[in-house]
Length: 77
Image (cartoon, rainbow, N blue to C red; front, side, top):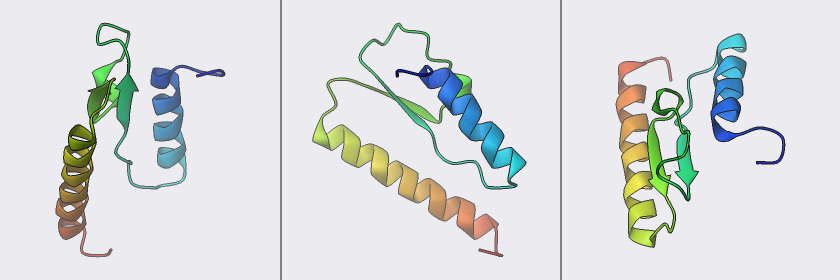
């Protein structure tokens, strides 16, 4: 990323959500190097390149299910 790395971007996203009283979004890291400095604490999952269509599909379904679960817990949505 030209301005900040993924960890910094995730921290910024989470800070903006907190400041604006928004729900935490699902943040997925996409990296070409499994051994890079991805801090799992900021991400819900980490995907590695090359990314297959099947793996992307699995991740999107996982996110969809997690959003459904979260929305069932929050009846005001």
